[in-house]
Figure (cartoon, rainbow over the protein chains, first blue to last red):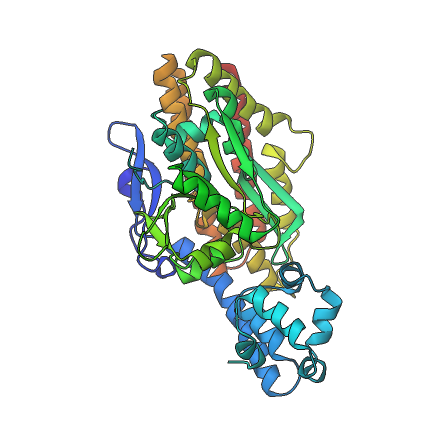
Length: 131
Length: 330
């Protein structure tokens, strides 16, 4: 890659940040060049973000329909999955899945709610509402 | 001495280059990367990130930090903590003593990074070099950021004690002793040979050039009819791991090419310059692979994993030739 070929087309996922890449200068030497972003990177990052947003939105709708608990919604919203939430909270995966049932979630002890909230960086109040 | 931030292409090599410079040894980022033999390729179908296999274009985290100890004649001290409070106290103590401290963090909890890039990736390296007297915020040198940043204590604590794959456990590290200018005639050929061994002789078929071919096979087998969405996520992941924050582009190939140019000058071996040219071309092939993939994800081209697999095989072929030539030159 020549330094004149370093992508400068912008990448909305970088939110104005610039990356540094090594590219070949006119003298043949590699040197650090700032890049405002490459569309290819934007596409693949956006793809991953959109997939997470889709899971979150889907969970929100199921919370409204009474099919899952706010816990699942928040788990997707903070970009976690069940294995990661289990590691972060120290609660077994099967228990977490059980807590996705609205009736079970509604009866959770303050201590358990506190562990979930702590693991996801939320307050207990936030955790109990899907918003 | 006041700490100087400089932006880098990759977090771990950037942190180590800055740290060595701070301790009086001028060292470029590519030299830190190359000297530690950090270039690699790995396709790990067993390690899942969001349900998709891990693809690495460099050696695993901490490889550079550890790998620089021998050539630079210094010892790195690593400390992890069971209790976050102990980790915070230790960091403050070191900063008060004027030490510049490397930290392993999760990008998800670092608020100064762009929202869209904050995934649960636990092996991001930053340097802490002080605290703001008034707010108590930490002053950080994040190699992928353009300038030094600050981070509130609560956020940094979360980032250092995040859970999951490669959990940092509050890891902090700093050098004991002074880095020495190495005997280039000795350390450079050794470092280069080590990289060729990793790329050509790894005993597992998922590491090195064979790993690229293995990945090509896996991509070829993807289902385009019934599960196009998953196929797109899979190939997107391969490119994301190539480009994501803290890595940068067919980037690792370009960093290594820069290292080879430096090595050519230090050893007075122009052959390494020609090899660097060759590797720049290979880096461009990786960029082309990323471009093809992105076009298929966006349906600008029809979804055709076989085409991507062919491109990977071509890259594998070229890297095979390149690392053999590099072995002879070293």
